Image 1 (spheres, rainbow, N blue to C red):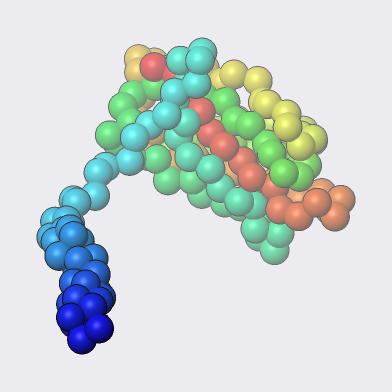
Image 2: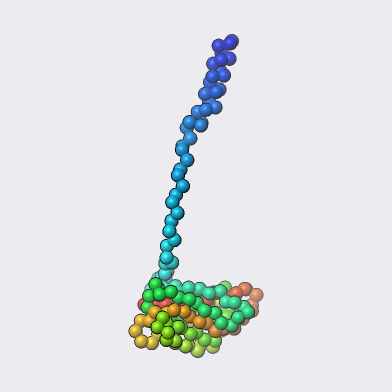
Length: 151
């Protein structure tokens, strides 16, 4: 009986330590990854997403900054989502300091697109787009305006 008790004790002790030895060593921490520059997303028609701006219900003007890495464009348009908005005008400021102003004065329901605006001259690098608008309160919250450019 004493031999059986010792054998069972030894077996029990062995079973307690087997899972410890069967575990994998801890993985070393992964080195930090340097942030990648933003990627311009293209939709199926070749339009680059230049950025979005959530409309500030208290202001009547918003600026959408566009960086030079996105390149030069010949056309722009915008899409309105989440809520309707009345766009009074759109002003495009180019990297060379020139300005192109478009009078729009139109209501855009949620999910609608503007017409395509041709940019004069050769391809132009856009620095920022300024929207002048008035909000239309329908209880759906703030509108989001997304600008697109075509090379």
